Length: 248
Image (spheres, rainbow, N blue to C red):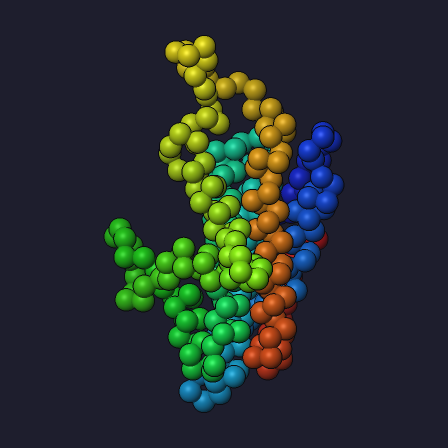
């Protein structure tokens, strides 16, 4: 059973009970979208059922992975371990990007023959890097996923990119560069570098680190609902898979 650690709640001028509630309810909120024992059918014989089964497999695997990432993120926050937090958050933010891309192709594509190859690409694609590259299906570039997901947040002539902006910001703290280094030490008095000793001070930086996490959770819930209610999906009406037991 996947652990479900609760985030430590603290009160200061910036903290929000709504944020804490959102994080602690995440597993219960997305559990209804996670299935198991899913039969993958031949898309040439029954394309509607094949589409739903492939989508259900992809959605379930992505969301189950997100539960494990969310668990790690909460533990890192509780321990004030921000180098680990940002590394996990980087991967967690890629979840709504992928879900947003799925929603985009489902709502914008004309037919299932156009959608299924993309679903297969998202499920089976991987990068040609290192000795463990498998198969010949290339994964879709992560920034493409973010750009398609962010199209759902357009307002009139404006074209905001909230998910991609958060992702790029988090990457600066997840990679080995200046922003990552300031979590563990800083220059003092101009020429003296001093290692950090009080990691609990991050509670004071709540508005600096929390929005990326809560935005990702909100976007995941939004895209799951959007996908499930589409007429092509209809909450997986053609399938009889059982729900994966996600205990609260």
